[in-house]
Length: 469
Image (cartoon, rainbow, N blue to C red; front, side, top):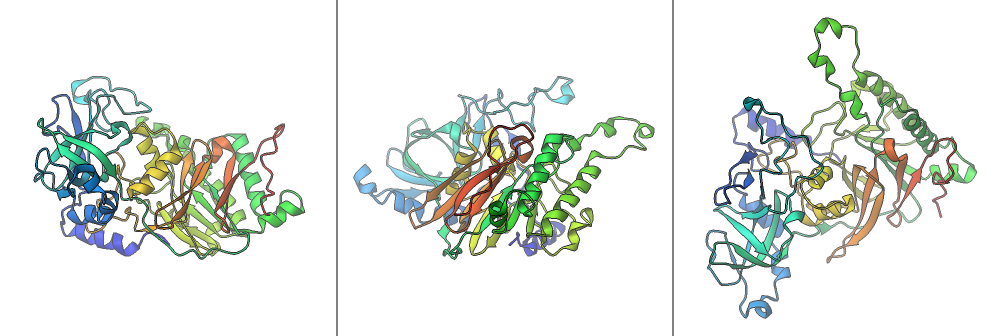
């Protein structure tokens, strides 16, 4: 199941009619934050709609602090940020914009403006600083959070509830905090025998790497049953679907040198992405003859930049589009495979949180977004997002059985459980062009294991596909 086209149609009609953009997408920029230290710069965002915080944190704070009498002697009161009594324990909930110093500005707003003829700073792997502050915002005002909270692990747009009291200096001393936690569980209807879904990401076609092309062809041969002994071929027959999670083309196909050259110098040159798309079409043709394939777009693929990314156009893949087994889907993508709910992205949301927090582990970030109840909290502040007005498709309303992200630096997986019986497999799908590794998910028991394809002369046997038991 893809993101509903009807929602996008309603959004288009509202934009055409001059509707005001939503808090998640309307004019999110960087500006001086009122009430912050003089050197602080923070993400300016319109007030959080009340229904959003109530939806994500409606019952969770009551479950977290049902024992409030033991903490404060009185039942914790819920207040808006502008109505809290000082010195008395209470519960605040709202949206947490980040505060950031000019030493680590976002890449979209360099401290050295081109209008001043100054050289902009080079991009950094991380945009965090020890002097970063934590600001909670609701419909009325903002308040600085101090105390029992890890500032470096928070990102702009997170919705949370905090328990504590306001101090004389105007800050809110946090004793405890909680997120929305896992959404409502879905009934389990998985198969009783071994069935597999293969997850791959970051094929990186068009990079010119022979090793990457060899690994990709080995992957195709393994899925189609043309590689390995009889036992490995019988295992390949149990693969019920292949999901390609974005970045099918290499970053090198995004070259913009032609924009800075005279037109007569580039008249007979061809974009690097043209040949890469042709290779993608031939690879998908081989896969679609044997197994259903879902193709998600990614950061370097020829589609729109902002989330949610729309499917690749079928006219670019004339050979593979002739097969009904090919599905060109959105990013993020949600689907039911043999009764198991899959939800995943091509990795932009995870990599963006990686840059603006101290979390270094993609699997940790993946779990964090699931417990926060939102796929991409940093959009649109530091990640491009369509300005949704009536609804936010990134809110998690149902708990998936498999939650994955693509273009990760290495393979990782683990199973987490929730208070209401939720059981979710988290998978960080590695970039295939650099790791030569894909993932096999067993739908029977939600186990996951990597399969690697090495070039000639490799000494390991990681490419063994004997996974069916």
